[in-house]
Length: 173
Image (cartoon, rainbow, N blue to C red; front, side, top):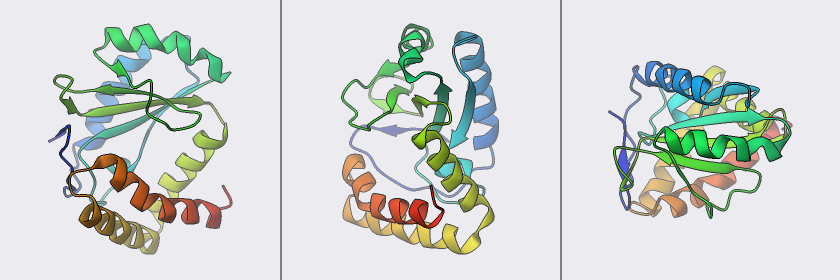
Protein backbone atom coordinates (compact mmCIF):
# COMPACT_ATOMS: atom_id res chain seq x y z
CA UNK A 1 0.00 0.00 0.00
CA UNK A 2 1.32 3.40 -0.96
CA UNK A 3 0.97 6.68 0.85
CA UNK A 4 1.93 8.81 3.80
CA UNK A 5 -0.07 11.73 5.10
CA UNK A 6 1.72 14.97 5.97
CA UNK A 7 3.30 14.76 9.40
CA UNK A 8 3.42 10.96 9.19
CA UNK A 9 6.66 9.08 8.73
CA UNK A 10 7.14 5.32 8.72
CA UNK A 11 9.09 2.54 7.08
CA UNK A 12 7.29 -0.53 5.75
CA UNK A 13 8.53 -3.88 4.45
CA UNK A 14 9.26 -4.08 0.73
CA UNK A 15 6.11 -4.57 -1.34
CA UNK A 16 6.56 -6.55 -4.58
CA UNK A 17 3.76 -4.51 -6.19
CA UNK A 18 5.88 -1.33 -6.11
CA UNK A 19 7.61 -2.01 -9.47
CA UNK A 20 4.20 -2.68 -11.05
CA UNK A 21 2.78 0.54 -9.60
CA UNK A 22 5.81 2.38 -10.95
CA UNK A 23 5.26 0.92 -14.43
CA UNK A 24 1.63 2.05 -14.36
CA UNK A 25 2.68 5.56 -13.39
CA UNK A 26 5.54 5.59 -15.89
CA UNK A 27 3.04 4.92 -18.69
CA UNK A 28 0.84 7.82 -17.52
CA UNK A 29 3.90 10.09 -17.34
CA UNK A 30 5.17 9.03 -20.78
CA UNK A 31 1.82 9.87 -22.38
CA UNK A 32 1.55 13.21 -20.61
CA UNK A 33 5.16 14.24 -21.25
CA UNK A 34 5.60 12.86 -24.76
CA UNK A 35 8.54 14.56 -26.46
CA UNK A 36 9.72 16.37 -23.33
CA UNK A 37 11.68 13.77 -21.35
CA UNK A 38 14.74 11.68 -22.18
CA UNK A 39 14.06 8.89 -19.67
CA UNK A 40 11.94 7.98 -16.64
CA UNK A 41 13.37 5.82 -13.85
CA UNK A 42 12.13 4.33 -10.59
CA UNK A 43 14.64 5.17 -7.86
CA UNK A 44 14.79 5.44 -4.11
CA UNK A 45 14.17 2.60 -1.68
CA UNK A 46 10.93 1.40 -3.29
CA UNK A 47 13.04 0.57 -6.38
CA UNK A 48 15.27 -1.82 -4.42
CA UNK A 49 13.82 -5.32 -4.00
CA UNK A 50 13.81 -6.39 -0.37
CA UNK A 51 14.58 -2.96 1.09
CA UNK A 52 12.31 -1.50 3.76
CA UNK A 53 11.07 1.90 2.61
CA UNK A 54 8.73 4.81 3.13
CA UNK A 55 5.66 3.86 1.05
CA UNK A 56 6.14 6.62 -1.52
CA UNK A 57 7.31 5.93 -5.08
CA UNK A 58 10.25 8.13 -6.09
CA UNK A 59 10.41 8.76 -9.82
CA UNK A 60 13.26 10.43 -11.67
CA UNK A 61 12.44 12.19 -14.95
CA UNK A 62 15.45 13.24 -17.00
CA UNK A 63 15.16 16.25 -19.31
CA UNK A 64 17.82 17.93 -21.44
CA UNK A 65 18.57 20.70 -20.92
CA UNK A 66 17.28 21.16 -17.36
CA UNK A 67 15.31 24.26 -18.40
CA UNK A 68 12.87 21.89 -20.10
CA UNK A 69 11.51 21.05 -16.64
CA UNK A 70 9.07 23.92 -17.21
CA UNK A 71 7.49 21.94 -20.06
CA UNK A 72 6.67 19.23 -17.50
CA UNK A 73 4.86 21.60 -15.14
CA UNK A 74 1.39 21.83 -16.69
CA UNK A 75 1.16 18.20 -17.84
CA UNK A 76 2.11 17.01 -14.35
CA UNK A 77 -0.49 19.30 -12.77
CA UNK A 78 -3.05 17.86 -15.19
CA UNK A 79 -2.17 14.37 -13.88
CA UNK A 80 -2.95 15.49 -10.33
CA UNK A 81 0.58 16.32 -9.19
CA UNK A 82 1.35 19.56 -7.37
CA UNK A 83 4.61 21.46 -7.67
CA UNK A 84 6.75 21.72 -4.53
CA UNK A 85 8.34 25.05 -5.45
CA UNK A 86 10.31 25.29 -2.21
CA UNK A 87 11.44 21.68 -1.78
CA UNK A 88 15.04 22.82 -1.43
CA UNK A 89 16.79 20.10 -3.44
CA UNK A 90 19.27 21.82 -5.80
CA UNK A 91 18.81 20.79 -9.43
CA UNK A 92 15.52 19.02 -8.69
CA UNK A 93 12.03 20.22 -9.59
CA UNK A 94 9.76 18.14 -7.39
CA UNK A 95 6.11 17.27 -7.89
CA UNK A 96 4.00 15.32 -5.41
CA UNK A 97 0.92 13.18 -5.95
CA UNK A 98 -1.51 11.45 -3.62
CA UNK A 99 -5.18 10.84 -3.03
CA UNK A 100 -5.35 14.51 -2.07
CA UNK A 101 -2.91 17.25 -1.00
CA UNK A 102 -2.71 15.82 2.53
CA UNK A 103 -1.04 12.63 1.33
CA UNK A 104 1.92 11.60 -0.83
CA UNK A 105 2.01 8.37 -2.83
CA UNK A 106 4.42 9.51 -5.57
CA UNK A 107 7.24 12.05 -5.78
CA UNK A 108 8.53 13.03 -9.21
CA UNK A 109 11.96 14.63 -9.40
CA UNK A 110 12.64 16.35 -12.73
CA UNK A 111 16.42 16.61 -13.17
CA UNK A 112 18.98 17.09 -15.91
CA UNK A 113 19.27 13.87 -17.92
CA UNK A 114 22.77 12.41 -17.42
CA UNK A 115 23.59 15.29 -15.06
CA UNK A 116 25.08 14.78 -11.59
CA UNK A 117 21.78 14.01 -9.82
CA UNK A 118 20.67 11.61 -12.54
CA UNK A 119 23.95 9.70 -12.54
CA UNK A 120 24.52 9.58 -8.78
CA UNK A 121 20.97 8.62 -7.84
CA UNK A 122 20.81 5.78 -10.36
CA UNK A 123 24.29 4.55 -9.42
CA UNK A 124 23.24 4.47 -5.74
CA UNK A 125 20.02 2.62 -6.61
CA UNK A 126 21.91 0.07 -8.72
CA UNK A 127 24.51 -0.46 -5.98
CA UNK A 128 21.76 -1.05 -3.41
CA UNK A 129 20.20 -3.61 -5.76
CA UNK A 130 23.44 -5.58 -6.19
CA UNK A 131 25.35 -5.14 -2.91
CA UNK A 132 23.66 -6.80 0.09
CA UNK A 133 26.16 -5.28 2.56
CA UNK A 134 25.42 -1.75 1.32
CA UNK A 135 21.68 -2.46 1.43
CA UNK A 136 21.93 -3.69 5.05
CA UNK A 137 24.01 -0.68 6.10
CA UNK A 138 21.57 1.69 4.41
CA UNK A 139 18.64 0.03 6.15
CA UNK A 140 20.39 0.59 9.50
CA UNK A 141 20.96 4.26 8.60
CA UNK A 142 17.29 4.63 7.65
CA UNK A 143 16.12 2.98 10.87
CA UNK A 144 18.35 5.28 12.93
CA UNK A 145 17.07 8.31 11.01
CA UNK A 146 13.47 7.18 11.57
CA UNK A 147 14.13 6.80 15.31
CA UNK A 148 15.46 10.37 15.32
CA UNK A 149 12.61 11.85 13.29
CA UNK A 150 9.48 9.71 13.62
CA UNK A 151 7.13 12.49 12.53
CA UNK A 152 9.37 14.73 10.46
CA UNK A 153 10.20 13.62 6.90
CA UNK A 154 12.56 16.50 6.11
CA UNK A 155 14.56 15.76 9.27
CA UNK A 156 14.54 12.02 8.47
CA UNK A 157 16.02 12.84 5.05
CA UNK A 158 18.68 15.06 6.65
CA UNK A 159 19.65 12.34 9.12
CA UNK A 160 20.25 9.71 6.43
CA UNK A 161 21.88 12.09 3.91
CA UNK A 162 25.38 11.63 5.36
CA UNK A 163 25.21 7.90 4.66
CA UNK A 164 23.96 8.51 1.12
CA UNK A 165 26.69 11.08 0.41
CA UNK A 166 29.40 8.74 1.72
CA UNK A 167 28.04 5.83 -0.33
CA UNK A 168 27.93 7.91 -3.50
CA UNK A 169 31.48 9.12 -2.86
CA UNK A 170 32.63 5.49 -2.46
CA UNK A 171 30.90 4.75 -5.78
CA UNK A 172 32.81 7.68 -7.38
CA UNK A 173 29.58 9.48 -8.33
